[in-house]
Amino acid sequence: MRVLLANNYHYLRGGSERVYFELAGLLREKGHDTGFFSVSDPQCETNPYQDFFVSPISFDTGQGWKVKLRTAGRMLYSKEAVHKLQALLGRESFDVLHAHNIYHRVNPVIFKVARKRGMPTAMTMHDYKLGCSVYNFFRNGEICTECLEKGRHRVFRNRCTKGSTSLSAFHWMEASLHHWLGIYRKNVDAFICPSRFSARMHVRAGLPEQNVHYLPNFVHVDHFQPKETPGEYFVYAGRLAAEKGTETLLQAIRSAEVPLKFAGTGPLLESLKKKAQRFDMKQVDFLGHLDSAGMDALLKNARALILPSEWFENAPMSILEAFATGVPVIGADIGGIPEMVLPGKTGQLHASGDAESLAEALVELWRNPDAAFAMGRNARRMAEEVFSPGVHYQGLRRIYQHIGVAA
Image (cartoon, rainbow, N blue to C red):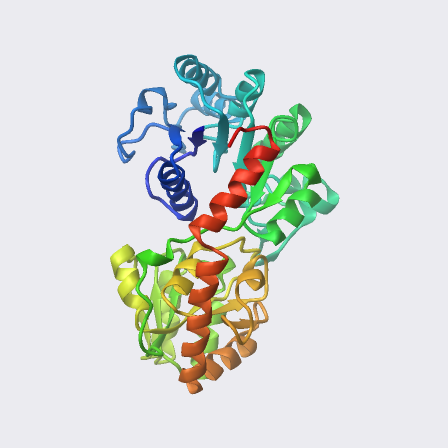
């Protein structure tokens, strides 16, 4: 089987790229060939398909209006993507096109190209772009599902895109055009959702239920050494932003008086630092961005990973990596998190946005190190049994076969 994988970035940039590259490796490990279709960038990993990659899009706000119009037109429908993919498929044949994040840059028009050639198509849903133009159902510090309930025009009416009327109008036009053309609905055979919550939300967004499939992400558990002690601190790893619940977390840490290490950067970094200093929270450390080796070392001595999200998290890879290390997770009861964090077994849940509830969970695991360690062992077993590469591969094969691929 030959699989053509498409993604906006052909270098490790975030969780979706990790899934993209890990899937390519898994397919090759199982004896299949993989090709790539992406956007040219100096950071791209060298590969034999890079001559067919589309040119990058500049989002420079200082551009003239004519350039901005051309950029907007390309983001709606990229002729370059059509021509480049046609050229690639004219040189080589593939059994299935499997896309990841392809909005704006690669462009969803690639599904129409594949459809015309009779090639089955699949798409992994890393976010909620097809139901929310700004990807995350989060506005003004709280959950917002108005586009699902009242129509796509709400992105314009509410100025959801960076508070900009023009950018929000573009996203309204984009969503309306792609819906009218049926770019996704008519041309994607399988929408692969890493959480059941994501699957339900995409059905609500109008995708055909029979084409929506649940398939959890996977982690190579054997690449992680399980920790050997209960751990001496809590860890938050990720973007420091409002939707991630980091302000609620800092408030809970102040109440619980337990040690916390922040690993990551983001728009709230300086604000969080100032609050920690104001309240003399010496038990809080800000470590900045850590590479994979740094994160591995940090988790090895963690009591638990904290995921206090206030938006609909899908299926965070950070949970799987914590589980593989034998670290339990304290997570918010929102989105796909409760599907992974089982209270009393692989961690604890708290009410999203509720600092008091989070503080109680922190104190419970801090006062009961043996229980926390046992939860970490359970989490490791869950990673081995539920989120293994083998389980993922068998599920993917079934989906591919369902859409007509001789997998």
